[in-house]
Length: 242
Length: 58
Image (cartoon, rainbow over all chains, first blue to last red; front, side):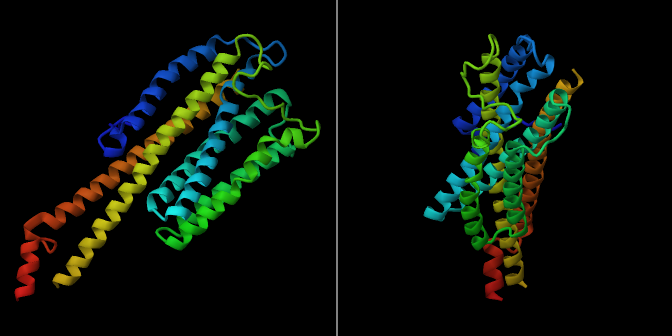
């Protein structure tokens, strides 16, 4: 049976990696309990509880794309492959969270606006953000192992970050014409009584899950590199021996 | 209520699905790494120092 909390590798045994596992396990029941007990919104009804998963996923996606740019910049500066691996891992986890955000958003929209999708500025920019980072992953998939591609991807990841603030402040940029509700921040007083704690717990849980998945994805990059190295060495020695 | 459950179910399935995919991929890579290491070690394979020395000698 697969054990997703298996911690047999050196990276997964690191204290920081173990902390992410503990946080995920500890925060999940607390968040689920808080969401279950959160008051029901008098205007939207029970569907408003999507609030405790949809914006946290968006924050997680932003974090992933910010990390992609930061590690990309570090790679360009230091030229160490580990930073490239971290950047790729952050982009992949960011795209996962962005996908989930793009799935939960239309469900909320259908329940409240009566439509799955509208070409609102925020929604359109979110789709653009998603395609920017899906393109990043495609670029990496089609140019695996190339140092030149890694340099280009690092630059692309940094430039792609421009879309993040545009997306975040799309409501303000649209000058009040946006259909999407205004931005919410953890600890914001826009939330009703009893709604802040499940929202904050949701953000913390998504961040902990992001960190946990990031470490695991990075570990996969390192393992893949070790396998390719070992196999190449084997082939070289075989050729030399014959 | 159906919309709410769908949103939460999709998020959980997506998250756990990706975590399982990572775990499965890691196990496959570990097996591949072990197989490659074993092949190099087995029967004084081409990667061993003794084999290399004998190949050089003759």
